Image (cartoon, rainbow, N blue to C red; front, side):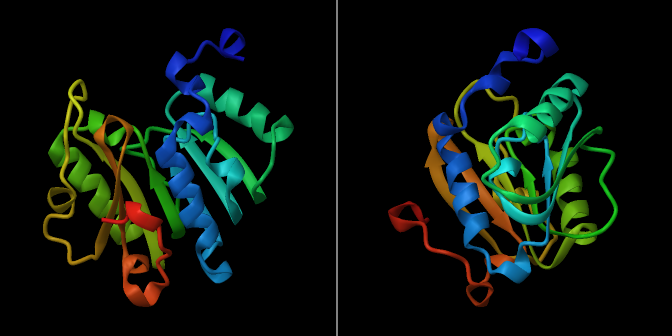
Amino acid sequence: MRLRYGFDAWHCIPYEAKDYAAAVVELARALPEPRRGRVLDLGCGLGDLLRRLPFTERLGWDPDPRVIAAASLLGIWGDHAGTGDLSFHTRNLDVDLPPGRFDLVLALNWLHDLPPAEAEALVRRICDQHLAPHGLLCLDVVEAPGYPYHHRPAALLAGQDLPWYTLGPFANERRLVFIGTGTTASGGFPQFNSRRD
């Protein structure tokens, strides 16, 4: 498929090799059914997370039209462990955001390319304008060398009074950060065994 569409090789890393991805899917599947309405995956790549999520509406956005073409094909012919409507669109992730609010927004494996001011502004906009009342934003931060920026969760949430929760570390000193009212104890946040910080 990569030869046909010409996208970057790192998109072909299998889902099973991404330990953080399995943790995200575990969390999403554990959310109560009323909180599994709409999910948005910003930087969805080939859609391997979206295809595994049991949400009513699953929307994937990515800036690379080659990746979106492949994700759309996999969405039609690939394995479907998830349910609900599934669609993929080519969009500029730090400018274009879809209308409406989401129960879960994923922003994984690309915020480390954004300078701090841009990353903070994007996180603020997602939280203010695109999270449902009990919604979650899930992003990742990395501390391993070789990444352009090593964001800190507290800095990304500067000036916002939102609860947040980290999970990890995973490979490449990656930590998942969950932001929003869904991270409170009353939100029913699931247990993640000994990996919980």
